Amino acid sequence: MKKLTCIVTFWLLGISCGFAQSYHGLFDNFFLRQQANAQAEAMGQGHVTMTGSPFSVFYNPASSSFSDGITTEFSRLDPSFYQNTNSHTNSYGISYNTNKYGAFAFNEIYYTDNLDHAGFQYIRYIHSIRSKLDIFNYSYKFHNDLGIGININYLWNDYFIESDNAVIFDLGGLKRFAYKTDYADHVFLLGASYNNIMLGNIQNFRSYPAIARIGASYEFDPKIKISNYNAVQTLLSMDYRFVTNSSRAKAFQLGTEFTLFETLKLRGGYYNENVNTDYELKANGHLANFTWGAGINIPINKLLGSQTPIRLQFDFANLKNPGYYFASSLYNTEAYSKPSAYYSIYSLKLNVGI
Image 1 (cartoon, rainbow, N blue to C red):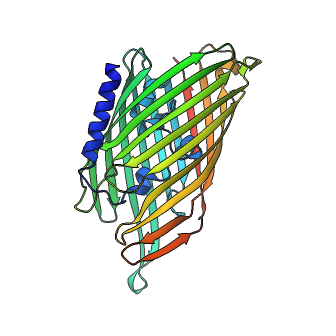
Image 2 (image 1 turned 30 degrees about the vertical axis):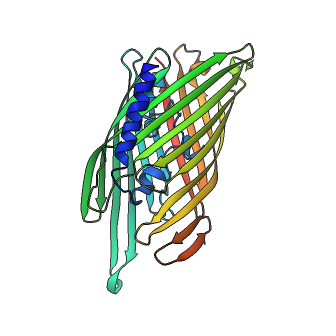
Image 3 (image 1 turned 180 degrees about the horizontal axis):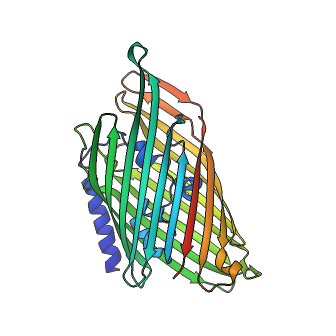
């Protein structure tokens, strides 16, 4: 109980620090919009209780404490900016859970946008916008299934002829409750995280979104086996995300995942959020959309008869950017944008249990 109280106290202290700045939406597309993880995108664009992926530390630094052995993952999101086919995001990650000494993870998220357009007097401009977030994670799980974690992040941005960088921090906690019956196993997870602590302006008009997440998930695993494979597993998740240094950017996210014979994963979700669409126009908008995706998990150890758990998993989602309601208090205008082009996310993950 004391450990849980400390985690909640640090989390609330971090949130209180976030109110010191005023965020205006500059980094929405990097921190709050589409992310290079097919599972999270397919399950409503958020999963603070997601485990087993190096990318999961982006949502909750404590998630790596519930990982198993060594996991490597590569993901690609393309295109990663609304109606811009020249942009994409790559994610590379690796995690290792020592069990005794805690878990370590590293993940790099790299966004690039190659712009090509005509400018003044028909001069053609070709330039790139690049952003990179390096996440260094450590987490530890106590004997009562309570995990805590911290991220130390290095953020770098290149805007045409200028660049900037900063070091930011994340905190997270994850609590697991499990019980068994004669017919099924039940697992509940409660998670909370706070991203971009000790933030500050990169330049006078720029600040980072101070993101608070809370969520819960429930996994139902009936004891039905066919040829040594679990016949079906069900996962439900619910998240609430808010940005403490902005009056907008609040999101409610739902997700579900069905796993058949430990191999086929079918996912769906829904999100509903308010957004800052244009700070200069004093505008705000609203986004809502259903999400879906699938995955193939190959239990290599069962196919080869090995005692060491080895799993190779491929996840995929192909989603349409949602339409949004747009309103500007500065110019007293309103508009509604229809859904735009599709974007795709591919993730490849290899796990070796130890």
